Image (cartoon, rainbow, N blue to C red; front, top):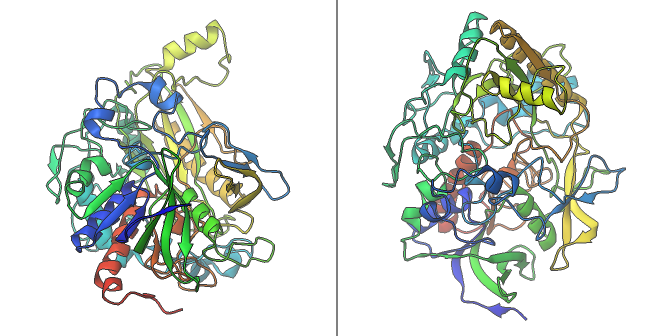
Length: 588
């Protein structure tokens, strides 16, 4: 039997980026906040020291920072006709674990979504007609606008000390920035990162073709910075170990380097690690969460009562916990009814490898968001008429660092093994670069999350089951922007290029992105969304659900900036409205 603990004002489940943001905001409002994190404590000087952090074998190949699948996994299939099988090895995506979550090993790619992304259905139907959104494409508007989120994007960028160049200041287009972005209220807190040779070559070729390249917005510091909370960050050293690694230089923004040094000192905040929440408990009406049941490292079970509960775990765990707790109606793909698990989406990527005989590129110099980007083919920045798809993605060279075990680019015709392969790797390691595409995935009726009927975890609970595949819309869009990337590659006058289209079904084995979205989406109607515009559960008003599980579909950008902006937006609504009169913030 679970040991019942004293009540707290607010309970935060999961302690990565959103958990830190919400806890900071609610403690500032005077609440006593308890955070439960299933993993262990992590701190920059102890866990990410530069003396050992740049260890590719330990951190990437042996998955030091990622979720251990022996403890918890999910089952995978491409469509409902298949039998889902457990994911036994990490591949396509890399969920984080322990304090800081996936925000520890992110690249620092800190995007704002386009204004049209938030009204995806009405915008596309208005511009292209109803036929542009077929019946099995279940995209919808978010219920919140870019203009409403802009102040919260700004807050996060200044907490992170984002490095970049504004392209649209209060409606005025700025030279050197992204001309397609929504209006921003002020310039980035730090200037863009210095550019190495590969993104410089890309930007030069793109400019010759008439495009408008701009520096990637980066949560990697271009100079020393002190954020609004008084936390200091150091300048990036371009070591090339951001992606899939922690940062011991205090130069990549994470919860540890931006918020936790302030939050952890507060007397009204408590963090319990190695405390895994296994269920949310409802009252007799089913309209209120009264407590959470969690298990500690010794296997003891506790019941933690709380007045307010905020789910801040990774998207997959948020959705699973809702399903296991009986909160919201599970999605049924046959009838189209229900909302929990609906509109799961991902990201679609491709690349063009570029090889030179006459240039030394030094690709090991890099950072997580160090690069130059084109946004001409993202979102609805271009005319989609007659192309057979909606959505888009960005194209660019993001030089994250050519880590030696992971990086061995070779031209077409190179043997797959033997002396010929070795010679090509030795020749082209310093002479190759990659142009990446990063594309949107529209939500479709057959892509969803539910509970697996067969496989269970160590506590006897059903595993989460993922049913997902790319559709014709995604393949057509990806092929289109890959061709645009190849045009820029050819303009660089290389010795050769290799175009890597995204072909076939989605495969869980090779790494792609950790940009999983949907399953508890936001919207304006409880019949078609799990949470309202403030990320408050339609069914259980004292429950708020953070993270990319709220995305109705996945735009062409990396999600973290929008995840954080939504967390600040929701926390503001809790502080200014909910706490004064607890209850639904939007009437159904």
